[in-house]
Picture 1 (cartoon, rainbow, N blue to C red):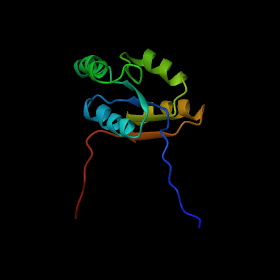
Picture 2 (cartoon, rainbow, N blue to C red):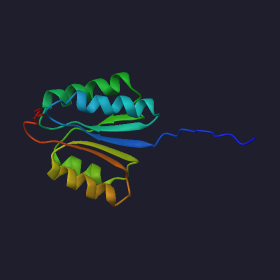
Picture 3 (tube, helix red, strand yellow):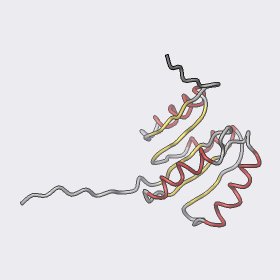
Picture 4 (cartoon, one colour):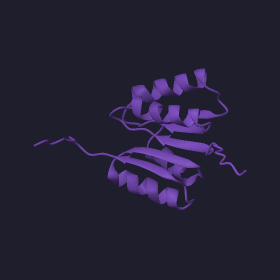
Length: 127
């Protein structure tokens, strides 16, 4: 008889572009998912949270495989250089303006992307 078989494969190399307002959570949360799916990851923490970026850059290579997990620190120039590379998935949290730039870079390689775009002062209104 025919049977259904599910076979899960890692995507490959995932780029995580972290946010400044919750720099640890919004970088390490997607990292945990990427690791559990078997992917390698490049994390680019926000340059607007330098202490969090520095601790991430020092702890990730200490506790995770340096061949598979990298942290790239820097600002706009470094992010622009990263976005020229081909990734298998991109996860971005931040502004809609930068989200458009990330999406355009991903489109060049048909890279799937998660854009978690926010704004200031989100509110929930209940009647």
